[in-house]
Image (cartoon, rainbow, N blue to C red; front, side, top):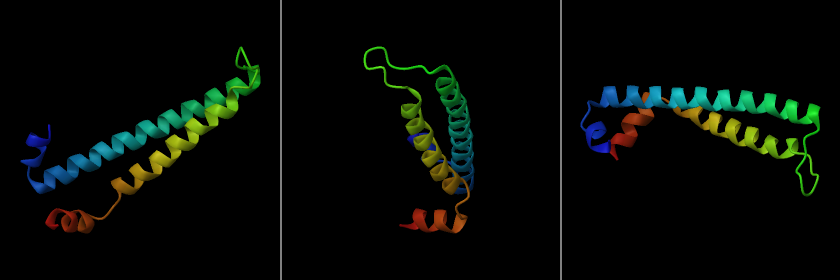
Length: 91
């Protein structure tokens, strides 16, 4: 895929990168939102591990934190300046 992608014009390549980052951002936000709903469900039902009887919802919080951190990175990548892209391409 890199062989094809590297032969595309720079403008199209930057556009496709931004579209890719935007799609990834939306997916991470969707996963975060669904995980938050799952956390509330786990908390409401009191679901716990079978062996240790530890509640499951605190561990699901880490999934949300990770997805939101990943979302911030994708947000940054979507809206970074084209100036930075041009400088990166020259070096």
